[in-house]
Length: 298
Image (tube, rainbow, N blue to C red):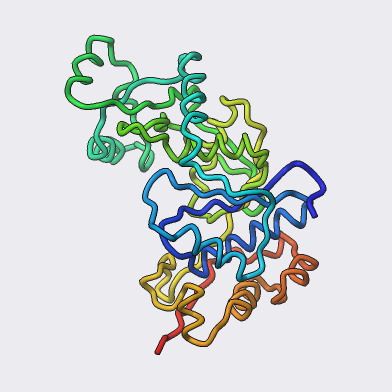
């Protein structure tokens, strides 16, 4: 049972069924939280694409491998006013500006020599009011953070201190939808989440998110970016690889308990949650991706 108000979390996007790589990250997030006396929370990051029935299927599969969680499910789609309030706070501090760039323009600018990959180069940062008025007639504006630092450092359980550049990230898209970066940072702060366990493909996003959190008064987050599951070609695991979801594995003769044992075994842990929790040590988590060979179905 939790012994503190602090929390860890698992926050999938309800775009389809979870595969074994997603479930592995969820199990690790649960182990990190429970081994440190934290609450374990679930959040649906459903601001963007959502597939009908996906949330129910994901909750079913998480329960099937034995995971439990504290409290109800938080859905980002129900929290729009909170995100807008946060943007207005940043705006009052002079930390928000309008951006009229298309994705293509941003991609072309960030591919220029010496530009960090994917970083926004500040094209609209210093437009005059007259220039903004002209651009507003051409296309709706997104809202960006006016970052005040070139970089930021976070502490990660597996990677140690990690520093990366901070650019002027999007806070509100030009279709009026709050950005992922804003929503995830604010939700973690409001839910008391101070431990974030997720795939290591998101490590490079952590410094900019932590910096945004500092501007919003959020407490520091302790990160653990864990290795992904990949296919035999070394590519990130996806449903197209074959039987990688619990229903597909069940059709191949591998039930949820056997799938959990397989996943925990890839971490060097025994196959039940109680036994895995008793032996869990973050220092012993494999640092290499888990190569998963999809099972054949009839």
